[in-house]
Amino acid sequence: MMPDHSPSPHEPRGAADFASTQWSLVLRAGDRNDRAGQLALAALCERYWLPLYEYVRRRRADLHEAQDLTQAFFAWLHEQNLLAAASADRGRFRAFLLTALKNFLANDWQRAQAQKRGGGAHPLSLDWQSGESRLNLEPAMT
Image (tube, rainbow, N blue to C red; front, side, top):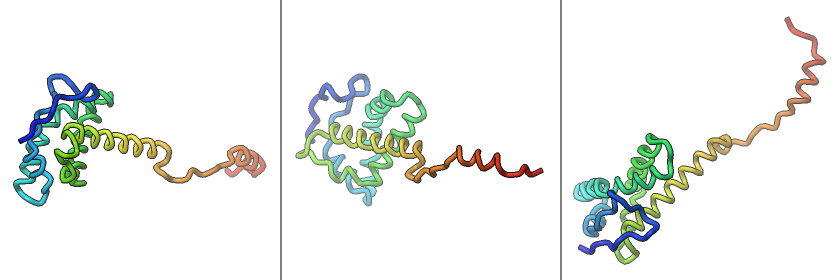
């Protein structure tokens, strides 16, 4: 078991500081097809959800949105099997989680912005002035 080092100034601090990493647990959680891997993933979620939630909560004003995003992050982490890419040789686990969370939040923000702009649909160019002019020339229907 290799413990993680103390957090950098860019990482969350406070009552919910990141727990020391048990790399054996992380590696086991990377095997999502195995029952032991699923239990390891549940244990990691239990250990790390609070500091990640605090990070999200400081960036999203809405309580429920922050809760939903934190939960969605863990679901995405599992679906994408990202824990299989975690390795003690590649750096600290908390940095891995924060980077993944930041990418997840950036993607969520981009999706939200695209939906506000029509979700990728091309806007129709309507000539309202010409329509009003033509409407005034047409006989009134009663």
